[in-house]
Image (cartoon, rainbow, N blue to C red; front, side, top):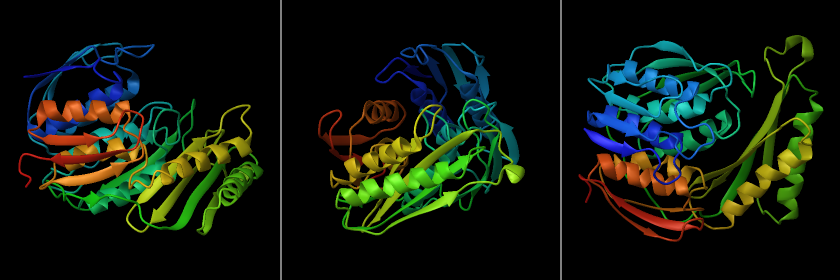
Length: 353
């Protein structure tokens, strides 16, 4: 049984999500202790329970200690054998964090699957659904894994109620290595600015402020931001909520930046925050933004060859992810760069050359 100390590195839910996914994929029993030890409310929260329960169902696992507040669980997987199903994360629990656990696992299934997830699609401390759709999924396509995510209804904190449909279009049972050392020329910046249960002016102001900021910093590329808003009589959301996701399509890559609205936060600030994040990461010249730099690591570690990437920030999340991957997989890696700075990573899986 593999033992994982959940207090390592960033000490949050990422260790749990990665460990459960890798347990399913490798067939290794795992005990995770000190779960979320560095958080103000340590132990399992409802959305973590949902991640584990879905993974448990997908790979017919036996579990111990899976309850709210638990700081230690045991996960014993069997065969990966998912079925089409619907899962409710509960209120505004993040559906995108659930996807971080289950997407790698579903790639090793014998069949394609369709899942419906209900919960939060645009909530703090997790990737917005548009970031997943327009930044993460293109990268999964690069490694040979094709997934379709349909947004049926948005869910914001605290009421949730969002709905997405996830379909795997293939089951590669392994991934292609990638080598991207620089982003190349920025061809276009695209975006989605949305608001629900709010005046459409909110979405407009978010988009305009983002566009103005990008142009004022001499971004030499077209900026195309679409608006999403609803007439009050036809708005199906619980809301209220708003946000914007921007992504730059470059010669070699896709990089994103995002921001969420909040009570008392001006729409112009939301737009500028997303633009600032995107420009900061673009200005490093690296191929991956700060978030994709750690989200892609499990796929590279399970690929069939050596990958080399550059990322905008070697975050504690990335550092922690590499440590977890090393506990389950025979990988070698070399990092050039300091924590919090742009970096270059070369990662060689067991089967790589």
